[in-house]
Amino acid sequence: MRLDKFFSDMGLLSRRDCARAAARGEITVNGAPVTRADAKINEEKDEVFYRGERVAFSRFVYVMLHKPQGYISATEDGNAPVVTELLPDTLQKRALFPCGRLDKDTTGFLLLTDDGTLAHLLLSPKRHVSKCYAFSLDAPLPAGAEERFAAGVRLGEELCKSALLSPTDDRKGGTIVITEGKYHQIKRMMQSEGCTVTALKRTAFAGIPLDEGLAPGEWRYFTDEEIATLEKAPKK
Ligand code: URA
Image 1: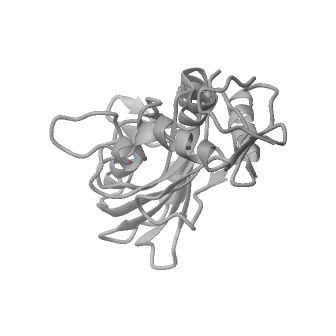
Image 2 (image 1 turned 135 degrees about the vertical axis):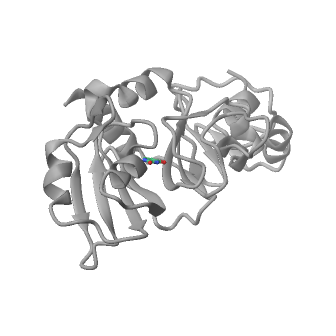
């Protein structure tokens, strides 16, 4: 693979920026500076460093985005801004897509990836991947909501799987863990208790907490440990 393609695929440098970085001597391959962006490397075996930091090759990209309000969980939409617009150009070229959907007004953890196989597994209702949300309500949750959510809430024709509800002392907020992703699921579950959700934030996905160092709209790559956790999550 060409050096500039490697950097562009890793979402780190455009081809032009790679050519500049190489000319400045900022890139080494197996310890030796490589000054030409069209140099051929073995992406699986060669040790590539950029500005002294190792750039490991991965066939797929996994990004943790702190989704802000006002964005649609999609790659394109005729009217509203979409979450992929929050990524730099180099990553937009990799055609990442959101793994699952958060409502336009929901904030928090969103995984963006180009690994269709893993995304499919993580989204499968059979896999029970956990999603934790923090919520605020317009009114206190009635007594017994915890037990009703644990038993499985009925939403019209649909029966929800058991959910773990932990209200705050005033019962106008709290956290909830669900293992599926029905349309507007938490808003509808709260509505079944006579409460309207006024704020909803996904705080963890597949047991991985949202990096609170990320402000709304910011993103970072998953760590190797987090990718390993994702790969394990569907197998339970
Ligand atoms: N449940 C909802 O109601 N909305 C979301 O965005 C996620 C879960």
